[in-house]
Amino acid sequence: MQPSDITGLRDQIDRIDSDIVRLLSERARLALEVGRVKGAVGPRVFDPGREHQVLDAALNENRGPLPATAVKRIFVEIISACRALQQLTRVAYLGPQGTFSHVACLDYFGSACELMPQGSIEDIFRQVARGQADFGVVPVENSTEGAVGATLDELADSQVKTCGETFVHVSQALVSQHPEAADIKTVFSHPQALAQCRTWLAGNLPHCNLIPMQSTAAAAARACQEPGSAAVGNPMLAELFGLQVVARDIQDHALNQTRFLVIGHQHSAPTGRDKTSIVFSTRHLPGALLNALMPLADFEINLTRIESRPAKDIPWNYIFFVDFEGHLEDTKVRKALDAIKPNVHGLKVLGSYPVGRVPEEKVVAGRERLPIETATDEWPNARRAARRS
Image 1: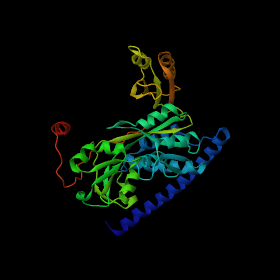
Image 2 (image 1 turned 135 degrees about the horizontal axis):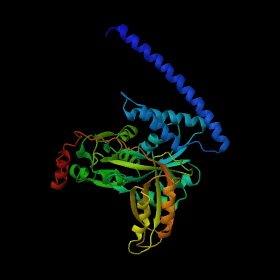
Image 3 (image 1 turned 45 degrees about the horizontal axis):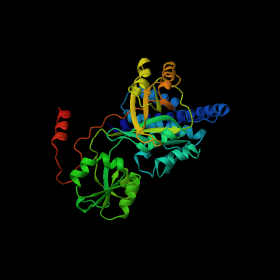
Image 4 (image 1 turned 90 degrees about the vertical axis):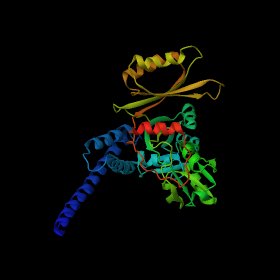
């Protein structure tokens, strides 16, 4: 290729960049107009249903060569910047920076918002309930370790609504001041992160003490202070805290994801592809749970999740968290809920919201491993062999 050819291509890129800036400015102007109209009818700025539709439309228009993940990231930031022109959105999350909750916030709301790191899941709910944060982002379940009990307990007791969900691929790393595994005697992390790496830690660091922390970022901060220690968490923790990545992708299951819920006070309008979450308890009678769920089948509503949790006020009693497809404004959903009510106690609708987009599966090839003999187990090895075949 001649230099003149490169110059011509760059001239085309420059013209396209100029068009992009002009169109972004026009989009921002229209977003301000939308904000003025919204202001005349109410204070709501964030519209999860509408933003979900915009992202879906952009992804459906994409024909490459940019991957879908890149297009989504670009449009999340465009939407975030335009939303901020109307009003700065305050979002509470399990902090500090570098946690997977932080990643979930950026993935859902973009960077043009006021992120408010909190010390616990209870604090997130408290900030939203008091109106000190507009929204909160809380982990609710992990694909390998299951439900996050603290979030379920708060959902049952709080008056905030569930208005969105997002999924984050979880890639755990071991970070430390020490590049050599032999120097590591203690490993800090959030209990979920430690559980997700249980087999790897047992095989590679069998003599280390595992110490639970409130967050993976708090674990990294502790690892900075204590010689002979390390933390498990997002690889970005190494850069944030001045640590070294000793090993990457140490989670026991490569396809590890965490589902996060967005909580707030507002209602999410139907999009045509929604999910509804409810919670209730049942009587101690044969078939009580079956009778409670039967209306979903009667109205051909797909159940996507059910989780039990001990009731805090009565020992050995349980409450049930149920997710199913459809929106509260759908006729068949309303009829199903009306049919469920006589069969349960304390039915509470947590909210209806757009179905989150699950990340594409990431199969980790050639994971980085510590130069230490790894414990073997016949059954996990057989399962891995079966998956490969």
